[in-house]
Image (cartoon, rainbow, N blue to C red; front, side, top):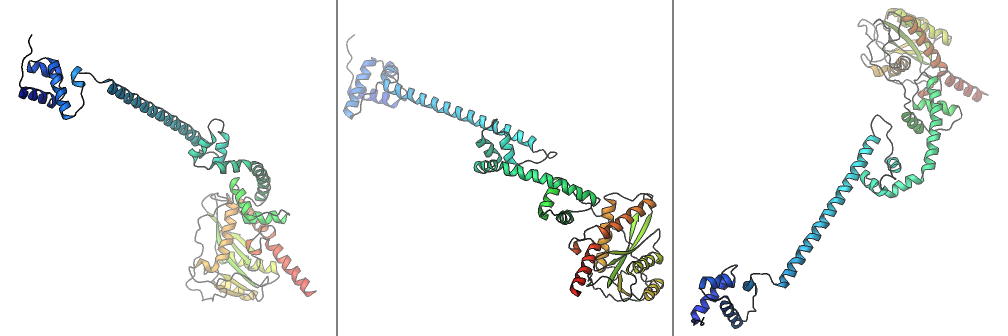
Length: 414
């Protein structure tokens, strides 16, 4: 077929149509124009040469050039590598989280509240073969160097633990001899008395570790009922419960003793302010004046007389009665009373009675029957004077404190 003669305008429009149609190929545009594909291609290439634009073979065959194909393949390979790296990273992260989960699960069981709370370092040491030490320390928030330092001190630590166990055994003996009443200060004093130089803080720590505790205070019941008709008695103590010599100042109070049937016995005591020695006491099933009078009479017998001494009490009706005032006059004792309704003005006696019930009841609600109550309180009062260490006496018993005082006076006199 003879070549057709196309005008320059037609050629220019054909080239423009090709160039302006996105995704067009020589074949598709040539078919639309009714010309040969190669003819259109020659027109486009010639026009590009005139414009200084390089040839474009993409429209010729409808395929991607080899260079472009290589670039596209390289991009795909790079993308695959990135995805594989990301997958590997996620898998590593998953393994890390699984390890942390296993560590924390074991740690949660390891530190259960119903078991002895152990050191985090000990946990790392016990599981160092199952997990890396580094990983264990990271999960538990520990410094590896601190762990290794802790591990290096194992022998010294074991030696301290053995020493604590030995000390705990001795503390239990002292604690049992005190009827389970002594806390760390008195236990420390008792151990020092036996020749063991021990620190009170260490005793307190060992007692906490081995659950060796004293007994607790009970709720107080009011026993002081003032007599509105009683004559006013001045406060000669003014909350000074000390004395320079035995027999100078005494204080007294009443406390209740609960029984199993809901009834009570009542205890009246007389304490020497110098040594806190119980020089007189009386137990009865009533709170009449006879109760406090019997306690003061016993104190006079114990001391061989109370002439010139001061006796301090609260404003209970028993202490404000005419009968008790007459007994004090007979014994040549000067009375003293604190303010009405102020327990602090007789705080030393309040504290004494609180200690008595704390150490004899030991958490029980009552003493049982009346005979058991009398025996229990009698035994404690006797032991209180002869053996129980008192903080006000430098942790000496009242009798020992007075004995040393008399010995020191004799030494000075000599």
